[in-house]
Amino acid sequence: MLAFQEDISLAAPGVPIQFDSARMRRGSEEISLKRVYSAETLVQVVHVQNLLAANGIVAELRNARLGGAVGEIPFLETWPQLWVAEPVFDHAMRVIESRDSQPAEASEPWRCAGCGETIEAQFSHCWNCGAASVASS
Image 1 (cartoon, rainbow, N blue to C red):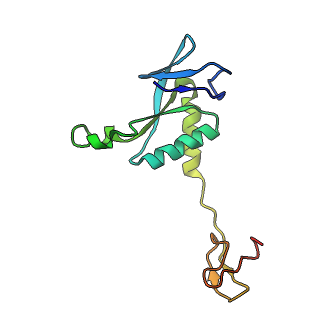
Image 2 (image 1 turned 60 degrees about the vertical axis):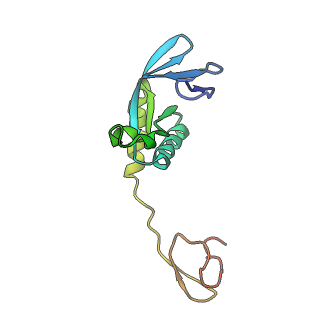
Image 3 (image 1 turned 135 degrees about the horizontal axis):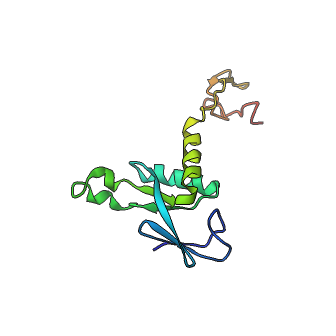
């Protein structure tokens, strides 16, 4: 059983939240949990868990080490999962969907003042001579 001592969304200051099965206990109050996200890799799921935490939503990570059971149980059931309290489920889904709908930043390549090489926008230094871009200076 996990206990969180954080003061976010459903957490009251100083009252631990405890997850157990498909319910969450806060003091004597029980709240149902719902699965909000699942993905093939733990990296993807933890990224979304961090995104939810940054938006004030406590999420429980399940199946973090279940990958070794592939073949014994259906592979989709071994994927890592995030579960949230039912009252914040809709908000959590909106946070996750907004992450998926944000367009990638489009920037123009820049020309190095030191050697004249064309450098892609995501780089702050020239790969050829090491000079910094004008924007990062």
